[in-house]
Amino acid sequence: MRGLRGGLIGLGTVGMAYGAWLMLTRQDLGQIVEVVVWLAAAVVIHDGILAPAVLALGWLGGRLLPRAVARGAVTVLVLLGPTVLVAIPVLGRFGAKPDNPTLLDRDYTQGLLAFALLCVCAGVAVALGELRSPQRTAEEE
Image (cartoon, rainbow, N blue to C red; front, side, top):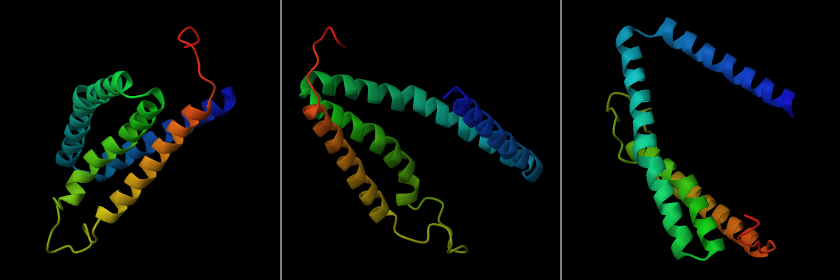
């Protein structure tokens, strides 16, 4: 397992280094600054808004819902929440350009709905798995 983990870390490092090299050699300074701003905004939004909201909703769900339902709901929230946030610009067609019909060339709503259905199925599977597993006492957790 340790060798596999090391190999995956190495592969990821090589991939990131290659991506950084491509960005630095093929983009001008303005584009690089835009990427850095976008990455910084993503970190701030994730760590400042999304993660605390998921933690709060997970905690609240754990207090108000039965255990199996709460675990299924948290599964759906963790899978679907970030995807919906990322999909907002695509669904709103922000960035579509009339002179380039290949950008946002389809209705992405069906894909998001299909993904949402898969997320709900995953949540149901988690809830059913929780119901079928032997109940643990508070000391075992």
